[in-house]
Amino acid sequence: MSGSTAIFNEIATKLSRETDLQTQLAIVVEGAMDLTHADAGTLYSIYEDQELVFEVVLNRTLEINEKAPNIDFPSIQIHKDGVANASMVVVNSVLLEKSILIDDIYHEDSYNFSGTRDFDEKTGYRTHSVLTVPIFDFAKKIIGVIQLINAQNNDGQIREFDDNDKDLVNLFVLQTAFTLSSKILIDKQKALFKSIRE
Image (spheres, rainbow, N blue to C red):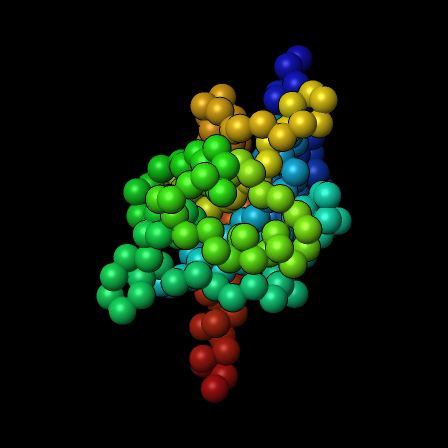
């Protein structure tokens, strides 16, 4: 059994045993991190096709393990003043409907990583490589994005993400998309119930 197959099976088992959806989302992020040996990962859901909302933020080096609604980061607008917010890599992954690989954010001029650089400055962390993968539901509609940071080699040294990482994570999120789909459906039901009560 290959390492990736073992991780797939382990995550499937964890998801089947967990009933809390937010914890399930964290399990999905951890699984994607394990597959690519990434140090950090973030999962966003798409709210009303207008913004990306932080659902899970994990960082092993900084020992960050945060799940919504206890995340302080503001949502990311998909459009600003009617214009696509394509300078944000997670947004562009949604707009292009494809995965994006960044070798080093400090040598990347195509996207706005000012927020990430501010985070690095405040925490002493150093973000290098990034892999951003859109998540589709069974109707092939994008419902979220997973972003992984700082892949590592067997010696624990930071490396660039590669096409194999991209393919593994795409396959993984395809198999676990039902978890995020369930989260979005329940949130919509809660919002509808709230609007009826009001």
